[in-house]
Length: 353
Image (cartoon, rainbow, N blue to C red):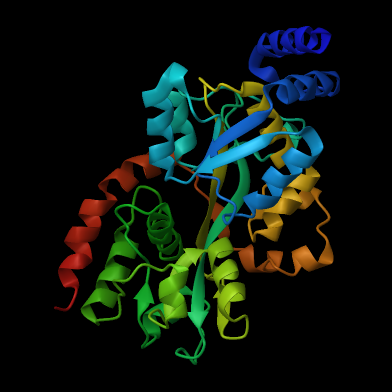
């Protein structure tokens, strides 16, 4: 009974903290409250993505938190939070960077700034702590060297090639949409102007060089894809799973986009302190290294010393010299909403029958 009362008091203290900024003397109380809740339920954070498996294992062994996940897209996660409200079955989710501000606008996020808050770049977090990227993804080329002898290292190389390029469904996949933005950066466009990229992919379509399959591991393994435009962490993961010697992962040297994924703590979470402790752990050195083991580049990478075997899984930092984050998120939000129609009108229309 004493333990129960202590945990209730700890929970009450934590819930009363303004904006819930972690301080050293709060972490013990947070841990106690999270242990009392005993579990954390996630959405969009399956074991196989970014090595979440080790995160859940760490939270269980360190803090006794049980875990369950339901895999779904970023949009589905936020819709679930909004629909369930006080009947929440999920405590925390992992969403694409563009969905952080959407979660705030929908009123489904609650703030929590972890201990390493100051080491997260300003472009990668919400000033109130509602969202912050835990890891980044940069658009890359995954090249099947059995089919492509002259490996492209830039969008310009891609244009000159004879092979088929696969980007996926620009209308529904964040990876594909960011591929369009990456090409725009390289070709002189920006968040407001993706015409250069649409022209680029339109030309590929005219030449019969634009793939229509989805750049997922099953299709890649079957040899159906020659060059895929994918997040670097997906490309590296697919390469190592299938055949490390057969594939090469390249960050285009003439420009790419760096984005990422953020945890969203459900405003209506039944286990809010366990969710906050999960975010705390994810942004810790151990949690960041766990993500790197899953090929995701930790948001705190410059403040970490990764083990040699983990560092070897990632591309050298020099590959990223012309990759940059989105500067005008509002403009990109507007453009990305129009992208399905623009893609249809400027690219799909040119596909050879």
